Length: 374
Image 1 (cartoon, rainbow, N blue to C red):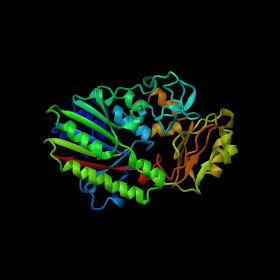
Image 2: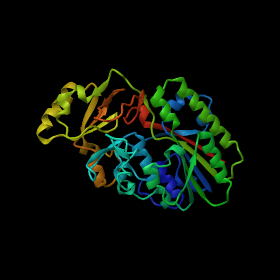
Image 3: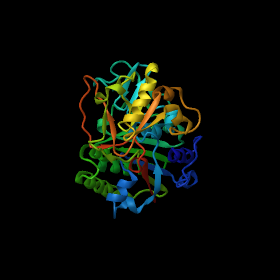
């Protein structure tokens, strides 16, 4: 949040949030061009562990925290609006949309129980993603680079604002696209590039897999080629991420179907993430819910009243949006260690993943800040 605040203020915009101490707006305002490369899933611990002798590590300026929950949905909305979850209201991967009466897989913009997008059912994404785009807050020529398979992304298109959408097929093409855009003219530019493949490989193969290590080195080579090309002077390239990940502990999965005394207390199926569960509890089952979690699940999760997380500013500062209040339930379970929570709706596809994010472990919460100035 503070990083986006620095970027907004460097381009003459306003944000109530403080600038990032490691990279204040004054330092960025000297740059004619700012390029922000978001590598999904690039945790600080992951880079330190597998990034030895890399260019990314060479230009590591420091370590910063993600938003809460440490999930792509919440963080992408922060990157694309310049607001914290406290304001934009995207509370996790699965979000209860009271206005539609359903739980949505929010980045796919569809109900959990089917593959048809809400757009095809007549729902305008801007009804849900209704905050101002960060690109409309900047006094700059703006570009949003997204992989081709995300061309129809509801959140990306809703928050495109005045930016020009540019589609690429792989990370090498995306970085070549950055070079091309920078060389087009001398106008002040903000280029935002999203690279999702590292996160996908972590989910599929696990963090410790050779596929993840190899891809990180491949990314680093592309980044090295970019900064050693003939870039315009007064250009700043920032690399950061939305979260890191932890490998899933297969023996520490809270399957709600195996805990019927807990499940019968809930009004809605799982919302939040696999590491943060928002619980909408039946009023007459509150004691049963609290007793069950306290007595049977304390080894797997911490229990909070959701309003307590608001009071402690987990989601951000200032007045929370009404939508956020609707989307975090009565209680929140934050999973411990490498544990996770799971349920599956009738008709919902079976997805097997080996690495998780959303929680508050160091591996998930801390992300790198890499900065290169020409």
